[in-house]
Image (cartoon, rainbow, N blue to C red):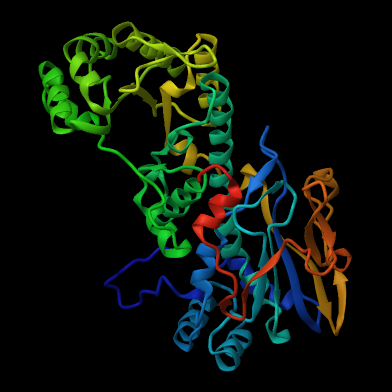
Length: 474
């Protein structure tokens, strides 16, 4: 949750657990049937998004670490109750006082989930939750805001990243004959465009389950701290317009020469459209600095950063081939010498990347020539409706008897019909995930496994295991 400081005497602690929910949740305890003892709910992505009909589940553990241990204190309750009263509502103080007194501030709920990194069709539940203390039946609903937020965003980022990387892999194999280098074909440029440092970290880590290229340091920190990763991603020395243009329009070539001298080996990237992109490609890199580039023990990655990428990318690659030459891949596509590559980071999203690659293929250019940097299209241009994520109550126990709960609005024509009953997920013999009533799933075959119980994470998942499950990064 966002942290903040203030000098005002009446400031409120930003980390107060009791204040992290939607306002109307405070009014719900009085709306359930008398005698309610347990509430069972699930989280699912309800619908595909275009051609993406499977969703990669990731990120729940980053929320669970915040829910572990003592999360409700007397100080929080004493602060939150009058604050919510002033807001026009009433905190269910009896339940939270019971959590403090009987559970030492630990949350009496059980959360089950798919293994993170699982890719399953839309409409398959990814998480389920039920309270373990009948006096805390309102707790699953109270937790909806942060659980849903903790799942939909990283899972959506991971899914879009996964889709793009798979599109790149398919075309890389088609043109180059293998997927060598795939782990660095999609680079995360999204940190500065994210809504917060926390969202950049969560989204950045979500991308890294599919890739090893990133400039989002927060994602690396989260991957290590929450999932035990070593170093989950890598970057390279790279220029920006402020550094190139600090030499002036007449000093661009001098800057490039100095950049090469300062980095005699390794992979480096240089933005090259500060003034005249094609002059930089043909005259500076391709003529004045050609021999230096080819003599390097490393790769110079040239970055166009303006214009229509459908035209600019193949034009730049072909202009470089005019100066540096090319060879043919085993599949007969043209590829630059290993010392020169291109990265496109402007105007990049999941659709434009595919169009750019298909245009390259039309012109006989191997996908090995190019990498992509994705910013807002990766971490920001998405929302909960991208896959229609929701958390719904599907069963309650009243006076010892379970009853189904669901909605089926006529006006939604079936698009918002929720599931009913206590649900599980099983994998068929054909490897397909399907939703089934818990009672119809053989023992040990429910894909929703316990991950959190009574304030403790009972199953911790590693980044390496998640990556292995996804199957794109070794």
